[in-house]
Amino acid sequence: MNLKKFLAELKRRRVYSVAVAYLVGGWALAQGIAQVLPVFDIPNWVVRLIVVLIVLGFPVALTLSWFFDVTRYGIVRTPDRASEDRGEVVEPFVSSEKSIAVLPFNDLSPEKDHAYFGEGIAEELLGALAKVEGLRVAARRSSFWFQDKQAELSEIASKLNVRHVLEGSVRRDGNRVRVTAELLDASDGFTVWSETYEREMHGIFALQDEITRSIVDTLKLKLEISPPPVSRSTDAYDAYLEGLFYSDKSTEEALRKSLEFFYRALEKDPRFSRAWTGIAKAWLWLADVYVPPLEAYPKVRDAAARALQLNDEEAEAHVYLAEAKRILDWDLDGAEAEYKRAFEVDPNSTASNYFIAAFYGARGDRDQALAYLQRTSKIDPASLWVNNSACELYRYFGLYDEAVAAGERALQLDPVFAYGEPLLGALYREMERFDEAIALYKRSESLSGRPAVGLAITYARMNRRKEALQTLEAATANRAYTAGDVPAHVHVALGAHNDAIRELERACEEHSSSLHLIGIAPEFAPLRSDKRFLSILQKIGIEPKKVFAAAGT
Image 1: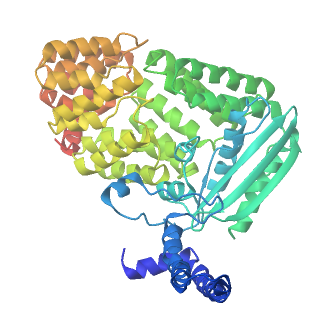
Image 2: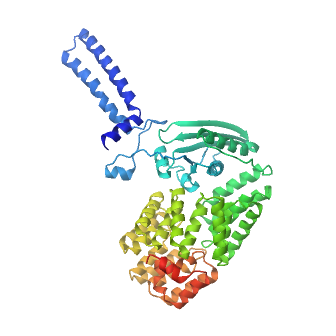
Image 3: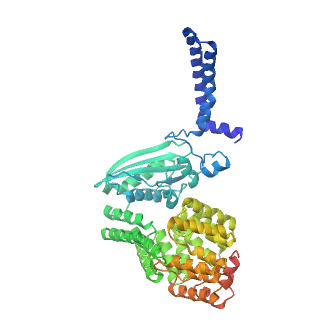
């Protein structure tokens, strides 16, 4: 760090004032000691040594102040490990725009059984703030990633590219709710606003509006908040929040449990549109992994349509309806219209940007796919799902540098990959870095306990046929459902094109959700001259020439 930056950092940490106070006070103390000590017949050299130690103590204090974060906690400032390895000093990050991240509120309830309520309160506030003009709000997945991570404020602000962070706690005891909220400025670590509220549950909607208004007033922004629907039941809302909590889990048990709570919310309030959106979301994530697509996606379509009948402003419901049209009907034009409507309603949500990015990628609309993908990465920078998927999309377009960056971010966010395989492994395979791909897949398997289909494809690309087929069998053995395009990847790599076509035709009959990607995926490049392959693409609405031209291979 150069002198100018060093002095600026000292100024930011208010070290100048500390230095002056130290020098003045230290010199006065040294003079006093110099006058008193001779009375006790202490040698002059001892007196001089004490004076020197006091004066020289200043640089020591200055050095310590550099490493200690003089913020609200007064804790040691821990540099980023990657920068530490390079021997660099981490610069404090400060976003230049009005921006905020909302962290999950901690559960302080006596039984510690209301974590879902703390997350729900945070999500409601996040949603309200996202509608404020001139304020950029970090997406839910990125903000919630920091839950239980014990991360410092500066790290959160840097990774989410925000200036302010809202955190808090909830305590529920019967029908009584206590909510504490605190708004922090990441540039200096100080609290700029905080408040504690105690309410009955029936006042929870007004409380959320009150917190939102306070934050907006503090940040000097304008906000128009519509009053919450008077017909909404607090019991329905509570059940909805618990359903939302489980719908973000990856297991079949959790997703089915979320459905129970969403339906319970509708029993309390049949006009609660977001409960129908939650049902569509749960079935979407159950599809293709736990439930065959022809069984799951009709439920996605029905729930999304019901949500939109009650409220056409449900952006996520438009996304889920688009997915149903794409997968059940191969209706890409109809799907595109729904994706665009979702973006129109909420241009800053992850779902409104990511799904349309993947859609345009599958159709070979390279520029549009990359534009939405880059928006998604800015909105949701700390999402494992977003970064892992971005690695794959960038790979399809041959943008390996961008793919490596996204894949490595995903690996840093969660080496276990609870939501799927590390797609960085596929990139390594494509770059013929086979040893690195194998090591990554095996490490992931050792952490998650699940063999990776990507490892089977890698073995196949290395002409290790026996290991490829054994790994494929192990990876699909315990799945409730396996789409045909999954084993087709391995068969193509082994040169068994007839087997690959047979599996792709099965995937087409069963309406696999990932089938639209086979046109642009480099793994299927060997089939691009096969009339049967071209027929499948045309049947599902893909233009072969357009997609092949957009592919990076």
